[in-house]
Image (cartoon, rainbow, N blue to C red; front, side, top):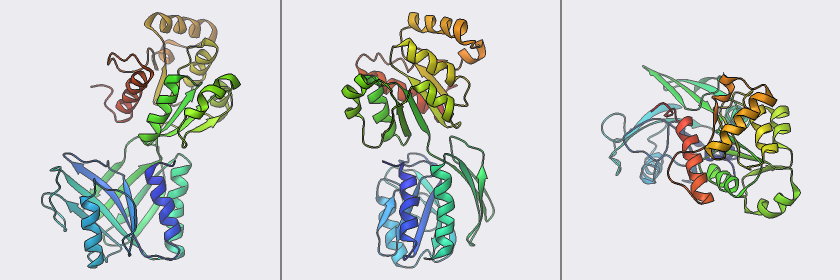
Length: 323
């Protein structure tokens, strides 16, 4: 299963061959909102759509106004909530939602534009989109990866930097790893599990959700050869030092935003000693490892432990680690 926004752009590419489209991107939210900045939705003239902007109320209103030709410009800003751009519609949650709406005509121009966006999203990079209202997008170029969408609006100039979905790489399968992988997928992460042990694969692989990518390779070898981008979290959750230690040795040399390993405080301390002694890991590198991994919520079961781990990863991804 692809990240929802990747699905949106992929669907838009297919529809743009023959259909007039409206590509909608959330620019900012105030108050309660179910979709973050950067979230996308694409709508056809006949009302079919992929993606979402809210819990449903915005989508219904947008489609109704689209059919009344309210969105005829190549680009425009729309605000839902209190005040601002038309249409002005109160949201049940009491929030405010600002949306960039781009009208795309079928043909080669839209296909090339959407193709650039799709390539950036699936190649785990970032892109900056520049739009001067009410004209079409004037620039779409590579950008430095960031875990959150960056939006700047000055007059009629809109600059929007979108990053590929965050990635989770899990070194080795375990009952906790299975829950982490499946939770991560639901949270919009591109999720990869590296597992080389046939006996473990035979027991646990079937429990992974359909969208999880299973790589039958020793985790440390995968990280050494493939590396990662800055939007990656790396976990090792096997309790096997032959796997966890080597995974951590590779992970601390990569630009991952989160690195974690499972174990008690005593075992985590012993692991750090081994990493220093045998892996030449520096104190600065050690400080990047979250061990014991996860938030302290009194978790006992594999599902609860995985929940605590993914909550901490999301906290770091969203820039709240210092709070």
